[in-house]
Image (tube, rainbow, N blue to C red; front, side, top):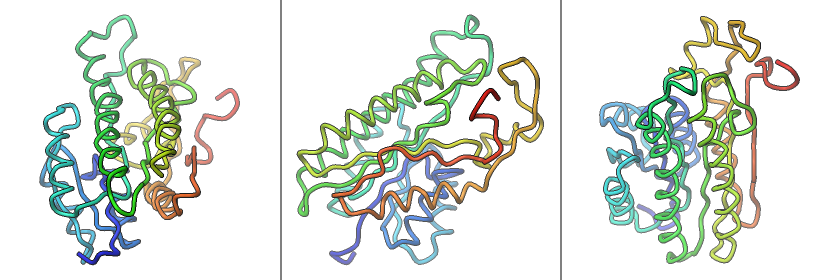
Length: 250
C-alpha cells in the first residue's frame, strides 16, 4: 500500500447503505476495510470495488471481542485508520411498545449504540496515536433521530442516542484532530425499506406507500463528508426521499 493511501473502515458493508458507502469511498481512492456479519456479501462488495484495495473482516458489532479483532486486523494490515463509517444497525419487530421483550430491546441497543461506541473507542485509540494524527468518524443516524415511526421505540431511542454520541465524539475528538459527523437517512432504497413499497403504518393509523431514493445518494454523501480536510466537518447531514412524509404533519 502506498504511504499516501487513506484507509476507511465501514461496518455493515455487505449490503445497502454500507455497501454503497464502501464503493463510493473506494472510488475516491480509499483502501476500505469491509466489516459485517456475513462473509459472502462482504466479498461481493469487494468484487464490486474493482481494483480498489479492500480487506474483508467478518465482524459482529454486538460482540466486543469481534470488534477488538476487527480493529487489530485493520491496524495490522494498514497501520492506520483515516475514516470510520459507523453504519451497522438494526431494528426490532414493529410491534406495540408494551409487547417488546427485554431481549428484543437489548439486541437493538447492543448493535446500534454499544457496538457503535466500541468502534468509536477503537478508532480514537488508533487515530490519536498515528502519524499524521487524527481522522474522521461518520455515524449513521436516521430520520428517526428526529422523529419516530409508530412501534419503533428501540430503534428510535438508539438513533437519538447516536446523536448524543456524535456530539460527544465531536467534542472529545477535537484535541486529537478527530472530526465526527452524522448522516441521517430517510427512505434509501435498500432491503430494509422494501416494505415501504407495499405500505407502512403512519402516525394517524393509516397505511401508505412511501417514496424511496437511490441508495447511492447516501454513498456519495458519506464520500463527500470523508473527503473534507480535518479542519472542516459536516456535523449533521440529512439525505432523504424528497416526498417522504417527514417534514410537516405527515
